[in-house]
Amino acid sequence: MIQKIFSYLIPIKIFKKKSARSKVIEVTWANGELVLDSENTNYSYGSLQRILRYGLRTIGYKNILEMDHILLLGVAGGSVIKTLVDEIEYKRKITGVEIDPDIIQIANQYFNLDQIKQLEIIIDDAFEFVLKTKEQYNLIIIDVFEDIKMPNFLFEKFFSERVCSLLKNRGFILFNTMILDEAHNVRNRKYISEINPKLFTSKMLPRIEDHNELIIIEKVA
Image 1: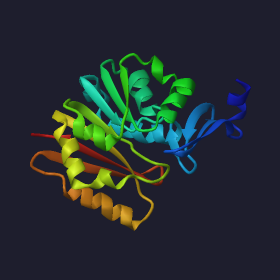
Image 2: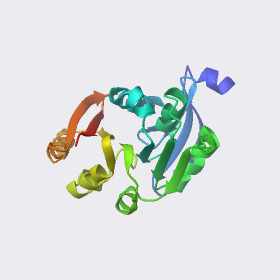
Image 3: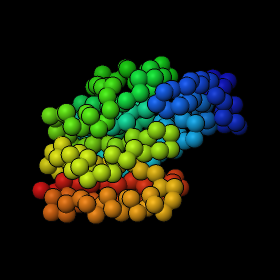
Image 4: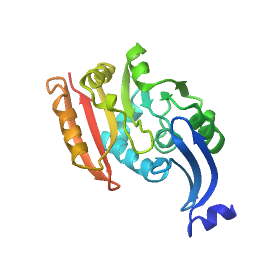
């Protein structure tokens, strides 16, 4: 409790671990809440939770409450899962795919992710999982980072078409991206241009928390 109080004055690091995937993982008290960070960016809670909450609000909490199955590619500490369960009060199935088992161990220990009964965690590569799954989803949240880097496959047409094919009718994709230079702007515009406008609508929510841009895709046919 003392650490929590003092964290309003200065961040207080309580855990640090090297990870083969994420290089460095840190748990810190900041402004009265626990956050999960990599070496150079926020991984869960803090600014990331605000970013994805904004995206969920744009999709509409009422729409989300009517969904049967939500897929999360990239779990980290699970802040968006906590938003879904604790704030939106979503009661149905959530599947989370995370490549880094160290992250899940920390999420269970510090953020009680393993106490969410409707949540299934799968340790797998997001690309491999998307190729293998035979399920369809009402909402697919893509939040895959290795520190500040985003794997190139996320923006390849083959992967985006495969992800879109997993959507149920009137389903949504919420894709969190990071914009650090003009090349990233070009990359995002190209990604949007390759979405089939006859089957999907798409829009960008730019410059959220300075460097993040959300892409929202809805299946309309």
